[in-house]
Image 1: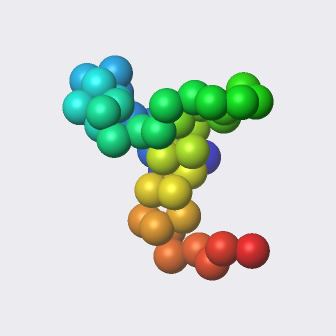
Image 2: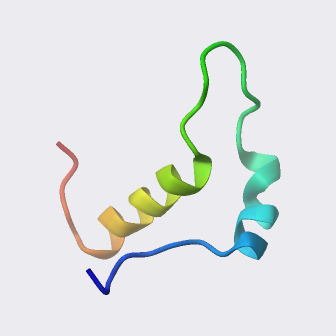
Length: 48
């Protein structure tokens, strides 16, 4: 599990203007979603 990818607070702050605003039901944490996308991309895994 040493290859997990986690964005720093500074990186999230730079990307925050590009995240959609919350409307309706509670959103999933943007940091977790983006880190998951980067993890899949870096490891060459397929989407299910």
